[in-house]
Image 1: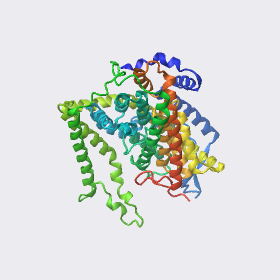
Image 2: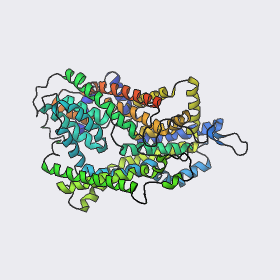
Image 3: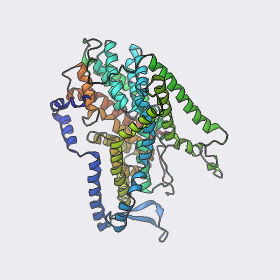
Length: 541
């Protein structure tokens, strides 16, 4: 496609702080090799730490011999045991990496929904029917919800927003900015969990498991549901205000007409998902979605209640309903897989994009082809995370890091806020959300658990920082494509122009997201079903 077009434009923007960010980021290795180099460094650090006798006291485990807290000592990764574990357990280390199964299952269904045209048609229909006065908030809301559609949000909705703004007599670049801010700046905001939640909570679960602080803790992909829903409500008026009151006035009135940017053959046609056939497909997809929801409701309330663990509360005095609902939460990955699969299949059958079962299987196969790079990345990340756990350095770092933070006297909400800012800064250099979280989680999740912040709270703070700066870094994989969309409407629009246009969104989203997570912790509101923001180590004290 047109992704190669921005090559010359990039040179124009290589000045100032943004140029430094771009040059520095481009010098970083691919995330796969980044993990490889980190593993080499980790081996060296583990050897030195073992020789120096680096250790910490386990916060919850008692030594049966002495009755004192168990001492955790750094272990060399070149010990005979760890070398054997590396080679013998390599298949297990990879296949038992928690995010792998979560993401692949959801993507099997999401791939069908995307390739059948369901995601694109749904977004196009929602935006096309928006009243002129509400065009900006509708575009922003659909963009944030469209995160479930992965690539379709960027490839379909963003150019479509430009066309719709131009047709309404408004500047098309303002529409592109609003859609880009919603899809990428509001990357973690949504009204329901999805594939991103499966990915991040899989990594969080791996980090908790390797720390051994709470062996009973399991990931629930709805663990940030309440929080991301409120994020959507908070981010929506911000994107609306910045677009209408800051960006569009700076762009000036649009005089180029309603179709000035529609003639670029190199770019996808965002109007291809409209018409009576698409409407018919959406109706069929809606019925399929209702069927899946009804099926899950039936499995919760029907006799036998397969998704309710009623015996879990037998003999437990203060048992929570959330304990009984644990199977329901864990079934949500399968639920989203079935929802996307059946809705995409129903849309495809109605519109003709899926003619028989072979087309369906082909779309699922294609979605797995798209996951090829992720599999390679997951292989490297899985071994980095596992080896971090084998060395004990993750837990030792978490214990000493928690003690250092306690000694500063910083309030815990402020600690969460600083974590948001750190994730946002790192995002300028490492674009992959999963790569960054795989790097940070083995230390940050246990450290915050020791400080009284739940794994769900650590994940929520990370995703706020990760999404807010997506829209201002040239290292974000879709950044060049957005530049192509913008240049269709304004030929002299360069890399610096796009970054400058998106900076106000990034600042406001980062500030509001940080304030939100701080207030959330102060109020102690659950982040999702059975997902408190505060945390107490089992057996502590």
